[in-house]
Structures are given as C-alpha cells and as structure tokens.
Length: 116
Length: 109
Image (cartoon, rainbow over all chains, first blue to last red; front, top):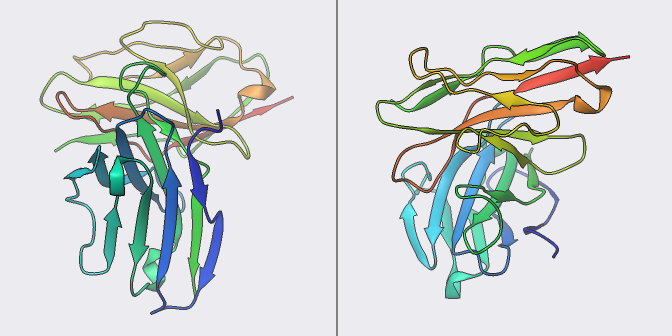
C-alpha cells in the first residue's frame, strides 16, 4: 500500500500564475482532507470531503482556491491566481475504511509551493 | 473557540533525560486528543490518542479536563525521538483535526 499519494512534491511559480495539486487517498477511505501548513505552524484545514461532497470548506479562500473530488476518489486543489502568501506545504490526508484507529488521519508527503 | 496551544517551539534535552511536551486546548465540549509526530523526511503520522490510553514508543499522555491539557511524556528520551510533535483536537461530532503549532524535540547524545 503506497499510502496517500500527492503530486507534485515541489512547485515554484511566479505570483499571479495558476497551480494545481493532486491527491490520491488510501483505497477505501471515504474522507479526504486538504490542509495548508505555513512555515513554523501546524496544519490548518482548508476543505474536507465525505465521498464527493465538500462538507467543511469554511477556511478555503474561495476567491482564488477551488477543489474537487470527482467520483469520490482522487482530488485536485487549485489556486488561481497565486499570491506570495500562498507559499506553504499543502497536505492531503484521508481517513475511514478498515485501516487505522478511529479518528486517525493518514497524510501524504505534501506539496511544497513557493510563490516568487 | 476551538484551539490547541503548544507553548514551546523547541525542547532540547540530553539522551536519558525525561521529556514533557506541553499541550493545552480550548473546547467547550468533550474532545478527543491526539499526538502526531513527524520524523525527518517522513510524513506526519499518528503517535497516540487519549482514548486508547496506550504507551507508544515509551510515550504516554493523560487528558486532564480540569486543566484542559494533554501533555506528552517520556521518562527517558532517546536520540531517535528527535522529531516534530503536534498535538491535535478532534471536536465531538466532527471528522476533522485541529492542530497546534508543534514542538520540535531535539535529543542530544
């Protein structure tokens, strides 16, 4: 089992450019999360999906961020246009199914974004 | 407000010394508390949860509702314990985690 897979691992773009991150959760996990982790801070939830439905997106800056989870499996997080303050590590996590403890989240390795 | 506070950014100890990583939370309901750990070049992973009341890698944590704390303890630190440690709160009825800012534990030989 590869665990949660994210790509790209690193992305450097200039401000005002678009960027997209992809996440493949653990097979059978119904819940998918996107977190943002700024330097020196803990992860902050951007959006949570239960299957295809976004059930918690109150922290997602909807003017420039969008996300989708088609067919309730893979997910994409997009930023357009990117700003300098968007530089961070974007973490995808999944939970549910038969693996892990109740409430346990399984994280990907993250996508590190640098906006110049 | 739901919040997790880890007051120490860095905790530096020598091998064999006791360790206590502090975590305080703010939540009006009945919380579930977790400790996650991130070793160098590895992904964030669960260390322990208060409901299980287990000792994992020699670490324990007790939920103190009176002091709203969930401190992580280990009697004798090892060099391989060096990592970032994050305390996390799961609000009742919500399938999400709220993380603290993290504490870096450095164990020196």
